[in-house]
Length: 231
Image (cartoon, rainbow, N blue to C red; front, side, top):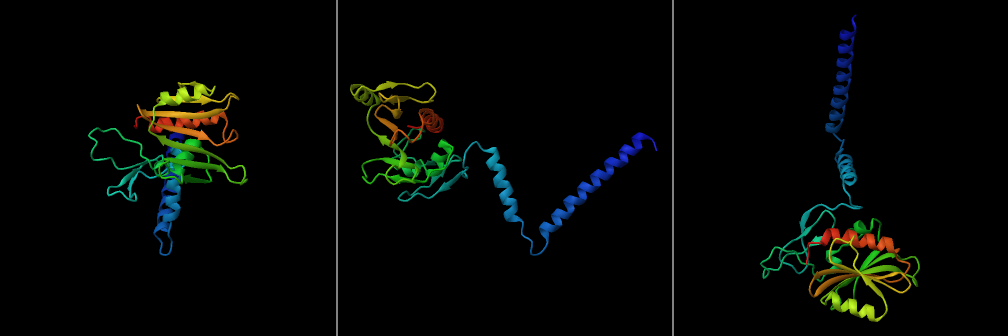
């Protein structure tokens, strides 16, 4: 038998074996009492996780938000876009005062690329902030950082920190208006995200051992990439 004929027969046999395997798998999937839906769903989920750049991937969908007549929108990053206010005619999306509700635990875990233990809203209803706990193992030395929304100017914050002898600068790697405040010890005190003339978010660690400066800057970069166009 010449070589080309032999090669053709061999390829045909390989194709036949492959088709037989597919047929057997499909028959098993259709067999009574055999439910492969969960297994297949898990394969799809794992594939999506591999293809995603997030620690967790949320399904983009409308969600019900308490005290709102319209639905909010969950993003793939697990950030929640709250319904827009009808009085606003522009198309800009605005950060709302429910910080924990909008910057969810899953979202902040995506930004930090690690798991958090819990989140906690401020007890004062006029304090628009959310604390994210990294370590709960020592009740006397809890490790957390806080994200707050405030209606003040960045310039006033800058002057106040400079009066206290702290170094204030803009970090060009953070892709939105920002201020980074350093304590005299060289540890980051606060990172500010400017949203508008008199509105900003602030990110503060509760102690010097929560995150390294590099980790805190990277957290700020990741958050800014997601909300840089918001006001």
